[in-house]
Image 1 (cartoon, each protein chain N blue to C red):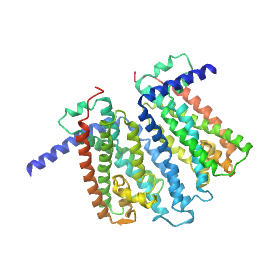
Image 2 (image 1 turned 180 degrees about the horizontal axis):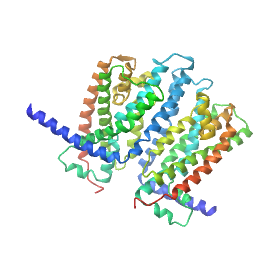
Image 3 (image 1 turned 90 degrees about the horizontal axis):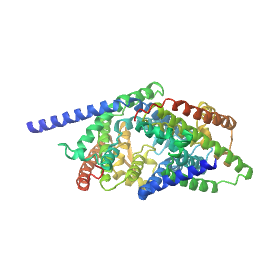
Image 4 (image 1 turned 180 degrees about the vertical axis):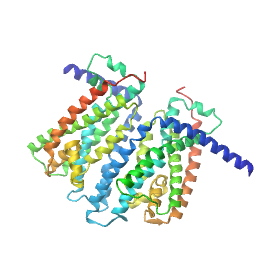
Length: 260
Length: 276
């Protein structure tokens, strides 16, 4: 474990050094990554500013859902989710073979080489949004904070699962970066109160694909709102992670080094 | 007159040839385009839920009824397939890699070549994105997207097609000044998408921002075609009929044509073929 952490540290340092060669571009890119994520909170703000609202939800409550989502994304994307871009690019170029011959677990190696420094903008933005949103709600208490940490870990698990599935698709669906668009479209369901969706969609985003766990449930816990469907969602997130890892290894077998 | 006709015929032949090659080239990635069949409708469904909730206790919001708002986002989805553009990315990549040098020696302006490529790419988008999603809206969501005035809507969408190209091409020209300008390009793209009314109708912005947006080119690429399609245009407290706003849109397209030409002349002097 220590060795892996050390390798992780070296990979992070290398990625940072490499990206710092063009500092201005890095800072602008990090800002862009954040700006893109702020569009949905901005749209929500514009809706509330026009005097409208989601029934039963104040602006800062919806904002908290979006803050938790961004915080979770801000951790996943720089450190894990680079696996998607990395896998698709290397498969297309035929350089994925170089990873296969390294003396470490291939999934771990793919994650290492996919560390994305500019996505740290998401993390900084997520922290700022979360701190601000939490300052607007009553303290939920120590126990709820503990449960929140657990739910947040599950949220990270769902993000990681998506990353594995998207990356795995690259083995068969060569060069298709549009998987990000599918992910972005699906995760729209995670950034709004679940009550605005129909019952069918609610079941879909809790039991089938636990999208509600990516933002809604952790935020609802802090807000003291209903957590109906949480247990199913937690179980589903476990299955989703196991399935995604299995799927990744299964798809790896389809790798044919076509671009080399 | 005869020379003029001959010139236009030649230009048309060039567009046709380049567009056809681009069409064939991108047709190899048909499955990538089919992602739109999932992404567009999913985003649309989310919007339907959002606005149904927002309109739960009101009839009208910023001049929109629920039905108009749903139509707005349905039209956003399909119009985006028609005007979508990546000239900025393409030009940026050519400059950055030095491959742009091959275009300088061609007896054809790169802007015209890039435009012809867009025609081919969007022709494919029309077949593989627009038509299927339009049918999906019609048969699954039971939304019939028929413009309030077909003639003006077609004109406005065509002008939006041109405007999206000139905006993006101008953004791409910035690559002549920036060694690595991917960040700047993406930043402008995000603001561009926001100010085109893709995420929310522009009338939701504060009034002073709406007044600024009226004079920026972005709204003419998407927002104006959508509003003309729906049949009512409003921004910054100003209301125009389809003929008036399409006229203004045409003027804006001419201005952006000139601006992109000027930027090109300034930018191309800086090209040094570093990556060659």
